[in-house]
Image (cartoon, rainbow, N blue to C red; front, side):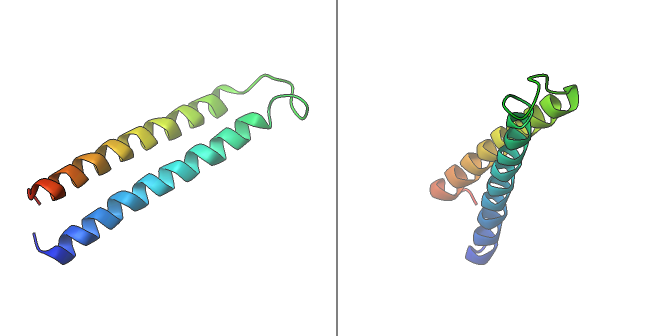
Length: 77
């Protein structure tokens, strides 16, 4: 893999982390709106699943980025 390919792969991995972070922020804000003072404190199953999925994607994106970065630093990519 040449330098440009490695840089592009690193960029894609970081963009995945950033997008996942935004998804967590958005779903957390949606959950917060369901609790007092604006909500009734009873989040829907969908809202909880959306937040859980966003957290899972963030965890997976971070792990993939860590693995990629480790490989790049070790010269394996």
